Length: 311
Image 1 (cartoon, rainbow, N blue to C red):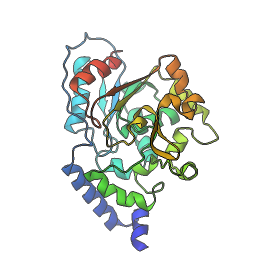
Image 2: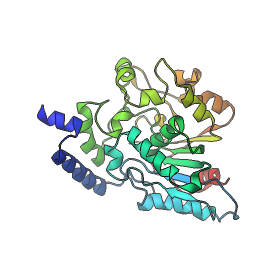
Image 3: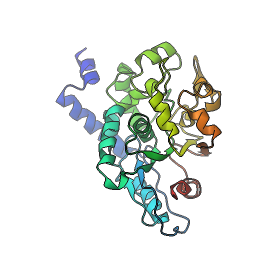
Image 4: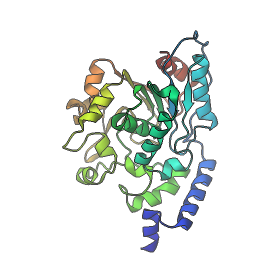
């Protein structure tokens, strides 16, 4: 019981030190959670005034890692003079041990501290970082996000604990209290075998997706204020399962493995977040690529994503 209490509350310095040390070792031994290293293929565009860009890494990654730096560098390389921020909010192990609400607070402080972002920015997220960005948009949005580009974001949750080095360390902690463990992963866990427990205990996702009976109108208003919302799905993703979550689909309640795409979900049909209205006005677009989590090609990035940063 003492061990469980320590794990759940993170109240002992010795436990925290062990956790951070173990996480850092796991992060150093695995790369499948890191941003891809991308090269600019096309020629730079003419110099022009453009909306600043903020990119946020995923779980276990860092804004200073080579992959993230390459993504930011291709944006500034394609569009000379573009102000691009490779966010270092919740870098490394902190992205795992810090809950999403706290990460949103840190992200808010960081963008408000940058005078060049005062009039708004385009947000580009990777993996878990997209949840921080969407949380910021729906709850804060000051300064405002004009475009939101989500690369492999688990927007409708995750239904399994991935089988890789990093998660083999995280999951024993998470399993002690799947919806309440003091880690970010618990914030977007969704067990389709038990809808009632999910709606009751989900600490973050059920609220953010307006899945409970009382809907938050501000969430809808803020999302619909975007001029463009882009969801990108990796069709062979084994990190975000089901990968349909990256385009707001998921498994059917009570039927793990039976995928319901976005436009067939109740949330879409009843427009709980305004996504249906956005799709009808072409403000919401979805893309996919053949490949694993965060493993898109330079060509896909250059031809499909970078054009969204042009204005």
